Amino acid sequence: MNAFFEFQFYLFSLLAIVSALLFVTRKHPVPAALWLVNTMFALSGLYVMLDAPFVGVIQVLVYAGAIMVVFVFVVMLLNLGRSEITDMRSLGARVGAGVIGLSLAANLLVVLRAPLPRPPLAEQQDNVVTPVAASLFSDYLVAFELTSIVLLVAIIGAVLLAKKRVRA
Image (cartoon, rainbow, N blue to C red; front, side, top):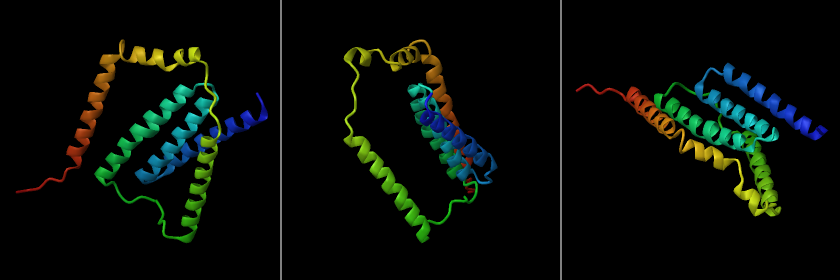
């Protein structure tokens, strides 16, 4: 293992631990949810570095994407209080956001200009997604569909609980 890989591994590990601690110590739910998303991204980076890119992508799509969007939606729906998110009208916040945005845009341009290596056709057909998808949509189809129904019922329940009762 080379030194750069080891440095990146410890960096992602430290980021995950610090984000998890900040998630646990927040008093308001929205900043806590954002720190949990940061933890999920750090864990995804660790999965990719440990040669499990499919698990890393699923970590981002399922947990940081779908589950956290539902969580933030329910928190906003229930109106659980004010958050700790600072006001973006200050000059320092605008400059910081601009610097981060420009660095992300530069990173995207570098990635888009670099030619992407393509594996041979035989390696494209023998990938890690095919067996997972085959077992998910054959052996575990009923469990998959029941999970989607349970999530739908949970969202409907949250809406009904948050609905303000009007007395006539």
